Image (cartoon, rainbow, N blue to C red; front, top):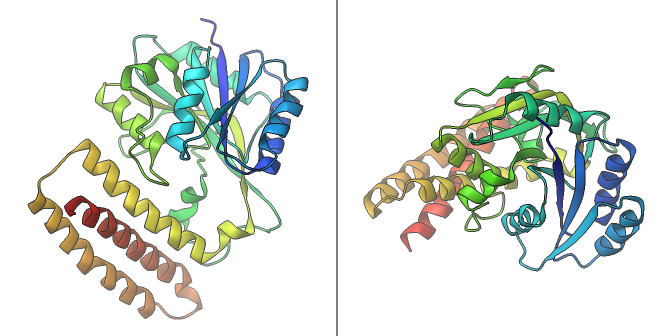
Length: 307
């Protein structure tokens, strides 16, 4: 089975990062890569010029402008413009490594039945930019929120509680057609790829991990600050609750009960964080604060559901 791949890079005002991503695609040629689609999500910087510059080097580069700001809108524009069997989404600050796309295509050729709903993610490893590594307060449970995924170098099926990450996420175009694409009602950090994964599971499909394909994802000093994580966890809470409610609509009584649960949990988590003093407890302190901000996010989404 021959598999062709359309790589979709959605971007908003990050021309420098986009340039590095496209450079990696140029420097790692692939037999399976049929086209690269740059989706400019209402950018006001040099994004269009960067795409035009690389179109001269990459004849199969397609530029798409999406005026509605939001990743689900951009991702939907991307797959609708794609002509290949498989749509691979790459973050604009990600870089493919040599052989990654062909390894991904090989996994599809071996494991994908065109009648099956499936999504495949690659190994995603960090590239530290102007920093030396993870800070000592960062609890291991929160490394994946830097959009990392390392389950080893072997291909395998994910378990029931495992999920892929959006920096390098792929699925057949026909699957996106069947499920209506990404849900445009999800908020920022809306887990839009999680929505697709949940729809695939509902259809009886599988999530696969391609350990032989590696994508590098940038980690900058801004993302290694506690305030970045706390904001991210708050938005994750909002998005997770919104995703849950879209998949399982509920009446006002369960919503009120959930709001009360998180209203009690949030201060308890913050108190537990303050209680963890001392150098050796940095990671536990951070973990409790993150949990508190997640609960605040749930409360915000639940409040919006009531009013």
